Length: 112
Image (tube, rainbow, N blue to C red; front, side, top):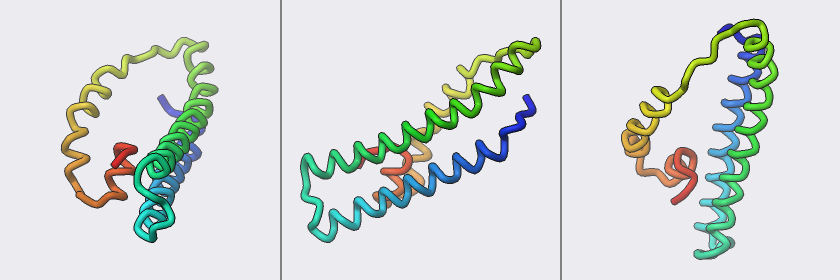
């Protein structure tokens, strides 16, 4: 499906990745400096990163849904994303194993 909002979606995805990496680096810097203690405060900071990822994902879904509903209204066929989700599930271990750096692990999985 050719989307008129493709550039905006790609920009939002890039901003989400960069924002998550920046928040992860900030949390790790605060932890290493001793400002953020181990335990519940660290877990809450990681939860804030997950919340940021969820908010950006919801906004991207909102942007996509507008054009998708118009596409569907005018006879566009809806395809199942099960294969793509299965491939992502199978590739998760490989992608997590690309780097042992904590920022990469936080960006990809949302946890340490």
